Each structure stands twice: as C-alpha cells, then as structure tokens.
Length: 267
Image (cartoon, rainbow, N blue to C red; front, side, top):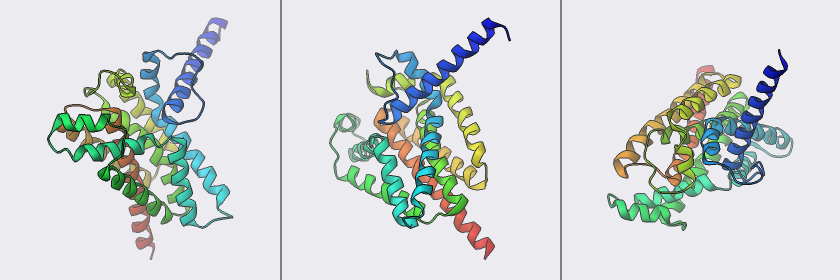
C-alpha cells in the first residue's frame, strides 16, 4: 500500500473510532466524549454505531457476570447486572420510558402529552412502568443460564440501541432542539448503517434465541413507529428511550421463551 493510501486508512480508522466513542459518550456516563464542542453532523454520524456501543455494554455485562459467578447465585447476579446497566447509562432510557408512560395518561390530548414529556418529574404511570420494566428484566435474566444467559446479556443492549435509531428513522422530531434532533439528522442512511452493523454484531451469538430476540425488538420498533406517528405525529428523545427499554425487555423475554422451549424439548 502506498503511503498516501495508508494515511487515508488511518484517517478512516480514527474517524470510525471517534464516532464510536461519541456514541458511547452519548449512551453512557463514561468519559468517552471528545474535548471541546461536537458538531451536530458528528452526533448524527455516531448514530450508526449505537448498536455497536450496546454490544460493547453487553460484553461488559458478560464479564461482570463471570466474575460474580463464584460469589452469588443467578438471582442476585441478575439484579446486579440490571442495576449496573441502569447506572452506566445514567438511567436516561428508563427516564424516557417513565415520561412516555406519564404522557400516555394524557390520552389524545396532544398538547398535554407534549407538556408532560417536557416535564422532568416522574408520575404514577411512569413509576409503575419503570418498576415493571426492571422487574421483567431481573426475572427474565434470573431464569437464564449457560449460553442463553450470555446471548441475552450480549444481544439485549445492542438490539435496544438499534431500536432507538430504527424507531426514529424518517419521523419528525417533536422539539425544535434536543438530543434526539441531532440523531434524527442522520437520516435513513444512518439507520441502514446501524442495522447492518447490528446484524454483524449479532454474528458472535448467532442462534435461534438471538434471532428470536431480534424479531422481538423489530416488532417493538414497528409498533412504536406506527403508534408515535398516530399519537403525536413524531418522536422525541423520551419516546426513543422508552422504545429502547421496551425492546430490551422484549429481547430478554424472547430469549427466556426460547430457553423454556429448549428445556421442554430436551425433557
């Protein structure tokens, strides 16, 4: 390879790494953000790597589970893993789920629903939604062992973050400004790139349970897109966070169902 070609490849690698780090900084509380201001187009480009960031989080959960295995049983490890994911993501997506649930309480009153989405406080509907989401995650994980557990831990965070990008593609952003506006600027091409990287990211755990999880996440995305369009005419960061949380729950339940069917078939 000529020196100029090597320089181009190095520049591309740095660009990809920078966008991946930006995705990680956007989705977690980890200090990956570059120094100084970040251009909106850089944030939009980072959307393509959201699922990759999720798979990295999933791999970290597998390592944590492995380290805790000699010390704690499945149930306690499962609670700690769910808690770890919530903490490292700053509970942002759980907050989005709670705000979405509260906004649903407004019914068809669009203006009231938008007002609730702008309110940072969590109401009764939101608290209940967050409680059951966490409960379902913990119980689903507590019933998984062996390869099913590894598949769930790895695939759920990645597919959930793909869901946030897929649910937003082509829809109108409901606010003039906000975190989601920069992501939506990525357009359909970024959603396609994220989908392709998601498929590649699933290859290490490619199996019927992983495919079932992908189908479950896709079903949530399809339903969310139709519902958001009819309900409010677009999406916001809170709605996308809620869609991600519901997708994560759906993936875990799908893998748990596969494990149940597998055990019944083996009996």
